[in-house]
Image 1 (tube, rainbow, N blue to C red):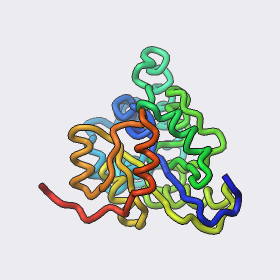
Image 2 (tube, rainbow, N blue to C red; image 1 turned 90 degrees about the vertical axis):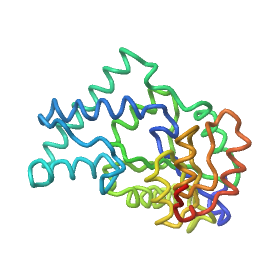
Image 3 (cartoon, rainbow, N blue to C red; image 1 turned 90 degrees about the horizontal axis):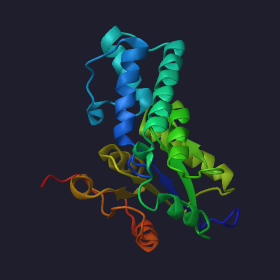
Length: 244
C-alpha cells in the first residue's frame, strides 16, 4: 500500500453476518441484556423496521417508545456492560456461536496487502461488543480504521466516520472507489444513499433478498479469494429496489 496514492480504493466491511456468524448470538444477548439491565421486554426484534438499524439507534427508539425519553449515559453504560458480559459468558460456554464467515480472516489479511485496496470496518454494534466478537472469531483488525455505534445513530454516519478515519490512516485526500460489504438490507440501502458501491454477503434467501434490494454482486463467503477481488472491482452503486 502506497501512502498518498490517489488510485487507492476502500473496502468497508460490516461485522455481524459479514465477517462473523454472530447475528444469532448478538440478537439473543441484546434482548436479554435489555431485560436484565432495564426490565424492558416484548420488544420488536425486526431490526429492519427501526429508523436506524444500529445499537445506538435501536436503544434510542426503544427508550423513546417505552419511556418517552432518550436514554441517559449511565443507562447506556449499564446496558453495554450487561450486554458485553452476556456475550463473553456465551463465548466461554459455546464458542461455536462466534465463528468467522468462511475465509473472512484470510481474505481480510490478503486484501490489506493489495497495492490498490485499503480496508476499514463499519458496524452498527457498540465498540466493545464488536471487538469481542471479532476476537472470538479470531479475526485480526489491528491497525484497521473502524467505526461503531458510538460514532453515530445512523448507518450513514458510521460509514462516513469509517471513511474519514481511513483518509487519515491511509494518507490520501480521496478514494478512487468506495465499496461497502454487508449482509443486511439496511446495508444495501445505506450504500445507495451514500452513493457507495456495494457487495452483499449471503446465501439462499439472504442472497435473493439482497438482490431484490438492489445488490448487483453477492458473494456466499470468502473461501475463494479471487471472486471477492473481482466483485469489489466490479461493484456498483445499488440499483433501485425491485420486488419480484
